Image (cartoon, rainbow, N blue to C red; front, side, top):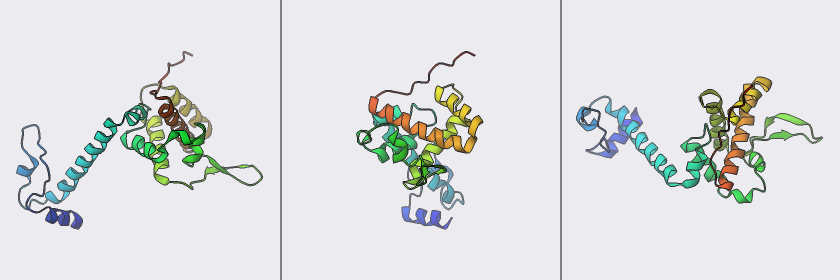
Length: 193
């Protein structure tokens, strides 16, 4: 709350930096004039809304980011972060190398036995966004896709936590292939049983 009030004091006479109107045409500045107690809460939220719109605008301008967002579960922030993290997809020798580049492969002990956890040596944020994309794919996506069907089968077999890691790695591979090939996500056709 103190930080919000300090921010408002820095803004001077105009604490609400832009006009936000409701359906009746009443602006936020008219509703929250003077020393209204909610002004300290709403002003930072309006600023976050403005930044969110700017990020969406950046993604709309970038052709690659728009194609990456065709993958179910991948949103604006995930597409831009993966685009920024990988930067040049041609320096990876194959699509399967993306998992290792983003540290989504299991670490191995010296004799060659696989330990079940990922290495977590690289950047944390791209992995976090890919895990979120995997969770959205499993829980929120209603439209059928071959990626979703594969993920659900995997989750039943090995458990949801391990399946999210595998799905995040698969999403990273799909994103790399879409980026290199210049295509969009293929949802596939549901197979009849």
